[in-house]
Length: 405
Length: 198
Image (tube, rainbow over the protein chains, first blue to last red):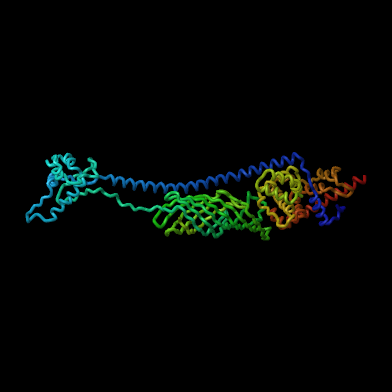
């Protein structure tokens, strides 16, 4: 160290103290060192706990959002099931509806027993006068047995009916005079018998239901492309990137399917934050521009809300895992008025399993084995991702060309 | 100075919040950090507080520390980064209003200067510790400006922005700090001469 004097210059003074600062090495005794470390460790634990609790609240919010999606999808499914049950019930009721049964009065019974009698008078009989009776007889052949009819109507069957001679009896009882659809006695009806009676005796057919053919092909493989817009929470700027990939879908129920795939997604964003925690000291950082090549592995459940022969309207929800292949960051600093940039690249470091919630809805148009699909979607992060530990939300639309087999 | 590879391991471990590596980093750089904090405050206990807060901020913001591209510069780069954190933490303490008693009565402290406890001591030499003690004896405003300008290399404009004062105030405080230090050096030199001439 230089000898000093009262005329020491500023520069010498500065050198003196700079040298002192450079070589000054105060010793911490063991108790001070240990006590200081305990204080630091406790502060770190407290800080981690503080950061964890808002994250746990955010976790709860994300779970609630996912639950809402599932409830809506499940509600639609239940609604559809109830609709189907109602239509089935209606069908069953229609099937069980009583048929109109013709119970001919005694005159017609006589006629049946003896056969049709043509009245040969000029003013009365025309050929078609016989036809209604014959038609009725044909119909009657399809209904109640004569003896049952007689018992219920309270008339005596013709004597020929009780004859032991089979030929006589055969003449008395029309052929095939049995009802395959014997109605319930409580609900039978007795229409008045007239010449022009055309009581319905055939069972009513259930109303014709529009039969929607369920999709028979269970597997779908598709090529996917789309646009995705990314935004960091508390940051105003969002950036857009192009997505592409491959998806596989398996239909395990008429309206339910599970979908997975692999998507290459560039996560482009601008953030004003870069942290685990914050440092008020390092306030020179103005912004961070991120360009992250990410592999997205989604696992979604899809429900077809509307299914037509050639089109489907669906909603889906699920969860994604991100594998960050390459992360390029540009840091923009303001070094006390002087802008500067620094760059950082990270390779294959950050992986976030089941960290993003997917929500989507879309429309699919089917041609034979091929289909085209458009599905806007939303991706909600369940935790921070990437080297900068940021909450990155995404929204976009995916277009798929699928092959069904 | 720790080895480059081991420092990378320690820093990576700290980034993943491993207590073991955090303790190791603290043990490696606590002396360096404490020395910086001792320049900004007169009280040893206060210096420990500043150091603790500085380390907490360093651990929390370690993800912001960018490894330099050139080999062999990691240790110096990290020391500079840590130094900046300690300085800003000390300034936060200064601005928070935890003022020390601004006493210009330096008689008691002056007695510590030139004491027989100093190790690297010769006829006309002062130990580094005593010089730092002189800095500590300055009033907080003078001491802060002197440290920032002379030892830590900030300009008056930067000091004015950091401390929230005008540039002229910064220059004025520095001038007064220099004057006080010259007086202290002179007194110390004279007392040393008197001791050895008697």
